[in-house]
Structures are given as structure tokens and as C-alpha cells.
Image (cartoon, rainbow, N blue to C red; front, side, top):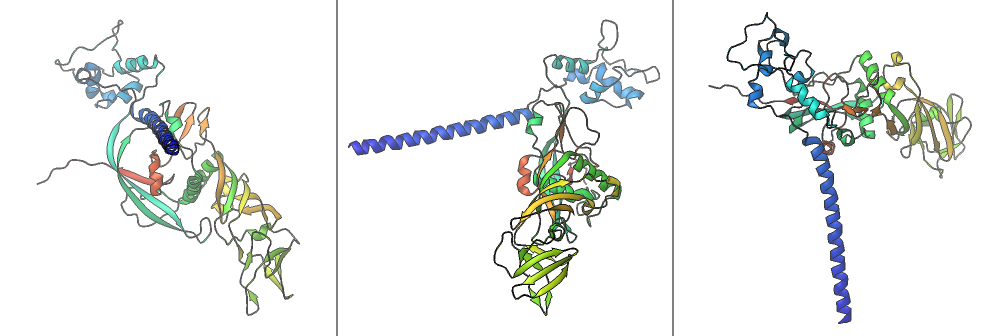
Length: 420
């Protein structure tokens, strides 16, 4: 009986422990979601009444030349220079309109600006916004083949999804904490898109991927390099021709070299020292391969070089002269790494490499002269990048569908039409 009682106590304790863990996890998830949802979807709302829409303050813009004879939204009212744009040159005010509400000095009372001032007295941020439903269609241009090499091609796919969208409320105090910094995948994608034109964004099936002008490419690259500090890079393929530029003079490396009809087609180097088909040594502007049988082959630095694995390098992009850049290959990168226990280092072009680790800037004390190509924070206000097409912020789950920073697209809105 004592054993059964002990087992019962153990089982009950385990169940209680698991229930407590489950409840604590669900409670944490619930609090996290509530915080994010209320930050995005529960702002203080100013809801105009029927009395507002029939007021002199709202109606006067419709007959005023200074307002282009159209009604103003709350956002437009909040920044309007004139509270009462009416002049004697405008049409006569309809007699059915209500009397205008005035200050003690007789001037027109600015209802919207006063509402904003009242909100700000409580230390809150006020900003107008719009909400709508639309169909989002993204054009996702992707590298095809080995990335960041001359053989790289471009392909394109599409993602269509019905979306619930809202205007960007950059003054929300909680928004900066909800915006994720660019991932390494996003940084590589932005470098890949640096020479890709956004033309055809609003076409359902653009014919081809076009290149941007040289000046636009240089502008995009400058924005990236200004706010990215690359720390590590990684080879994108087993073949890496820049390795020939890093091999130290006179140092032997284990290598394999398939020989056909007395000619070496390529060289393969293991990451670590191991028994191989011969030794490879750099001699000036040539490579010397000595086989196990004593045969000697003098090769050019252009001989295809392969590594049995991907190589990670410490990297630093040297400050370029932007006006001389026509492609990523024009950038010079100072790198350090090791191969088979031997240190490698030097300056190489951006060829067959991708970003593996980097620091990005998102927070600024004042508006940067060159804004980054991702959302950024100036003091406490979030801002969208200044791109050719208006930028949007998407929920994180879009990443699960392969969406990356820099992808372009458009919103399609439904409109009622007549039919017969």
C-alpha cells in the first residue's frame, strides 16, 4: 500500500507541476499578445459626431478656394495653417449653416487642434489614422543559381493575400519595440535588390526583371553601407575563386587535382589538413601543384578552386568612392580567415560572398542625412524608409511565406461598379 500511495503522490505532483507550467506559459503568451495587440490596435480614437460634420468648422472648406473646395480630414485639419480659410471672394455661406463656434476674441475655434492639445496634456501622443481592407500582391524577386556571382540569375514569384491595413502611426510610444531589426537574410536580399528596378510593381505579370540606373544603384548602396557594419561574411558556394588572392606565398596546402590527359581541370582543398593527392603552393602570379607521384603542374590563378565546405571570414568593407561603383564586385573587402590551420588575409572583391553577421543602425537622435532602407526610430518616433514606392510594415508571419525586406508589391482595393 505504501508503494502505491507513494506512486499516486508522485503522479499527482507531476500532473500539478505540468499544469502550473502550462498555465504560466499560456499566461505569458497572453500578456505578450495583449501588449502587442493593444499597442497596435487600441489607440485613443477621436470619433467625429454628426454635429461635427454639420458644423461651420467642417463645412467651410467645401466652399473655400484656399481649401481647394474639398473637405479636410482630421489629419489635414490638425496641420492646417488657417482655421477659417473663407474669404469674401468665395461663394456666399448658405444661410442654413449653423453659426461658427468662436473664441472669446471672436476668432473661429479650432476644434481639432484643441482636441489634440487636450490629449497631449495627459502626456499622450495623438495621430490620425485610416483603416481599410485590400488585396496585397507581392512580387518576390529571388536569386537563381549561386548568389553574388557573375553566373547568378534572377527569378520572380508572387504572393497574393487579403489584408487588413492601417496607416503607419509612427508616434505610438509602443511601436518602436514591436519593429524587428533587419535579419541577415534581409540584408543579403537588400544587397541583391540594389540593382533591381521596381518598375512593373503594379503589373500583374511583369515581363522581365530590369536593372536600375547606375545613379540609383549607387544611391541604394550608399544607404546600405552607411547604416550597416559587416563583421563576418560566408562563401555562397564550394567554388570560390577569390581564394587564390588570399593564399600566402610559399605556404603548402593539401589539395586534390583531377588530371585528364595531363591537364588539371580544377583544384579542391579540404578545410582541415588531411591526406590528399598532393600539395598546392602559390608562387607569385601562379599556382604550383606537386602530386604524390612527384609530378609538377604550374597553373594560373584563374584555375577553378573548390573548398570542401563553406568558409566563414571576418570581414570589413573598405570605404568606397560611391561614384565609381557599378556593381557589388567593385567593393573591396578586407578579410581574415584560416584554412588547414594557416591564416589567410587580404583584400578581395565582393564575389561569391554573403553577409553572415552584421550590425545595423535603427535608432537616431536626429533625422539622418541618408535614411536607412528599413524602418528607423528618430528619438521616440518610428519612420518608414524613403523609397521610390511607399513602404509598409508587414506582420512577422509573412516571413514564413518567404517574404523578405525589400520585396515590392501593391494594394488592390475593391470598388463598386454599375452593371446592366
